[in-house]
Image (cartoon, rainbow, N blue to C red; front, side, top):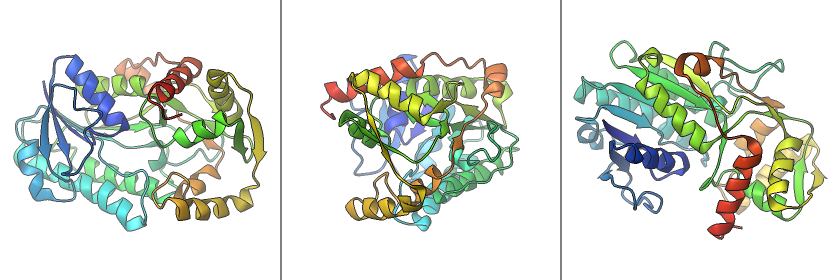
Length: 320
């Protein structure tokens, strides 16, 4: 098959490109002019320069491909407008260009996020039919991206994937917590529960959804099916380091202050007001029953081995 991947130079996108190429598919990557191609330069693929914010640059990119995997987006931004410009309008531009230039497309796969639905309000895992209540600008912008995609589902075969928190080699968003844990400390603001998915499992789920006709017009949550407390996550990472970390208790009411400091240090860092607002909620968990039953999605990597592989990669590449 011929596949177009946006966001190919990023964490998840680069892993998806590797797997598609490994399976013998013809892969084309839409990248911005100044993108760092480090993670995909050794893969047999084609590069097209373009930007989802510029619809004119998308027309030729979407022509002639069988599948479009739309991963390009922002997880961190300096403003709400920036989130919506890229995550919502960029998505609308891409699917509009697809409708105009590729009437025979087999599937348009949009990678959204658990954040588009928001945290569980009652302690039970959210499902695909849970009413979305995003609590961050990032989540709201991803939900708007979903709406743009679903608005075309009668004209284009679309599928939406909502991953839980994703970890693995090349990830920079959660990397700061690995750095803190290596020093033997971790921030603690009360017991919380999270769904996680290792990047390789996520990639397998994305491809399964693209190739399954049952997935047309559908939405799926993807995780490793377990719910982890923050202590269990810390223990898995600490075990990979061979250390025992100490809690650094942080009252929730001062978390916005840390966000303010984080933004002063790095305006687009992971420690920001939008992300801290998400972290004040205790249940970021989702149910993958639908993906298991309709797609045959069976995650293989559990947290202990996944965290060890991630730590090993960080060490080998001297991130730690």
